[in-house]
Image 1 (cartoon, rainbow, N blue to C red):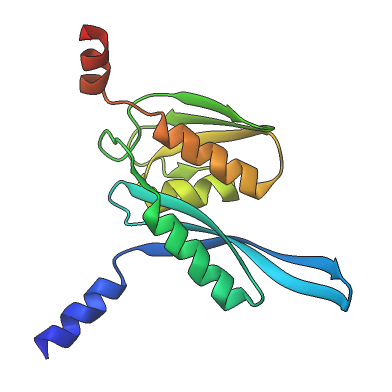
Image 2 (image 1 turned 135 degrees about the vertical axis):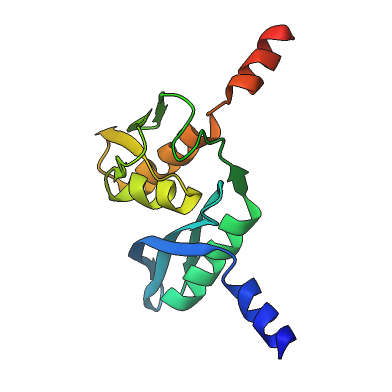
Length: 162
């Protein structure tokens, strides 16, 4: 009985959030080939987060692929309490994302694309603004890049010493 409980615990290790489902089609000799591309954010709410894009003929398979990719390419997000250590501005392609630390109790003040990534990472208090692109996929990747570029004070000090 205990083993069964442990197996269930293993399954719910990460929280998965589907950000975007896109129906894509390709012209072929025999007509249109229809598929789906799915953007998924995976996180453990303890500082680990990953983003994956999966494509397949049906949504379920695309989600599975996206989750597998996201789990393989996870990053650790440095946190200071319930927020981020410092303000960060990232421009990735046309997407521009600004993330600012916020005092406890503020909550997540962010648009859909940023909210998904930040929430999965386990950040509770943050203020953000999406500038530039309205493309959700681009904004998710920009947020991911922003979280990747965060450094704690000790990491900064070490970089200065070297």
